[in-house]
Image (cartoon, rainbow, N blue to C red; front, side, top):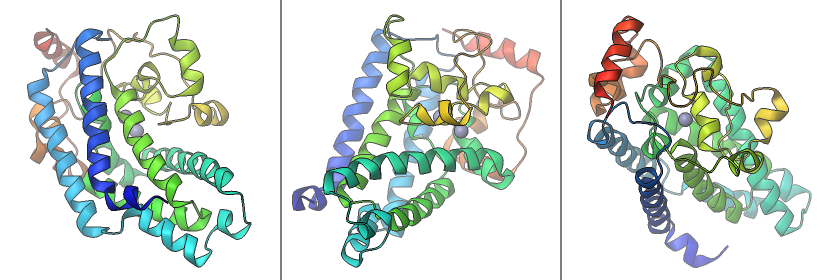
Length: 285
Ligand SMILES: [Zn+2]
Ligand SMILES: [Zn+2]
C-alpha cells in the first residue's frame, strides 16, 4: 500500500468526489435524460448538506476508516484471502468483487427489513433523481453500512489497496448511476452489461413498489441478473415515471436537511396521487 495514498486518503477522496460531481453535473446540463421535476436549488443544499454531515460523523466515529481494518486484517492474517495466501493481484480483484456483492446483499436487506427500510427510504424519498442523490444517505444508514463493511473486510481479508479502490469506485459509480444523463441508445444496452447505468438504477427510484424492489446493484450489474432482481425499464418510461416513494411526497420534508433526517421516524405526509401529479407538473420546467 502506497504510504502517499494512506497519508492523503481524505484529500484524495474529496478530490475524487468533487471531480466526479463536476463532470456529472456538466453532463446533466449538456445531455439531460429527463426534465427536472424539482429545481436544483430546492434539492442540492440538503443533498450536499447530508454529505458534509456524514463525512464528519464517519471521521469522528471511525478515525482509522475501512482501510484501517484492512491493514489490521493484513497484519493479523485475518480473513479468507489472507489465510489462503492468494496472490496480491488476485486478492485485490477478488476483494473488490466480493465487497460489491456484500453491498448488493446489504442493499437488498435494507429494503427487506422494515426497520432498515425506514433508514434507507431517506435515499428514495428524493423527489427527483440526479448526481447528488447518489451521495444522499441517512447518517444512521452510513454508520450501519460502515460496520457491515468493516465486518466484511475482516471476514474476507480484503487487501488495503482493494478497500481504497472500492470506496473511490463505489462513490464514483453511485454518482454516475444516479445522474440525469443521456447515454447514446446505441451504447447503453452494451454498457449495462459492464456497469450499472443511470437508466438501470433509475428504475430502482420509481414510486412503483415492484420497480423500487429491483436493480439493487451499484457497480456490477451481474448480481441483479444472477439473483433475478433485474428489471430493464420502468413501465411508465423514463420521461414520465414518478420518482420517490408514495408516502413521502412533500418537498418540505423530502428535500430539506431537517426533514430528511426525520424521515426514518414517522410515516410521512402522503398526498393523494392525483393531486401530487398536478403539483409535479407545476414544478416542471
Ligand atoms: Zn434502495
Ligand atoms: Zn439510489
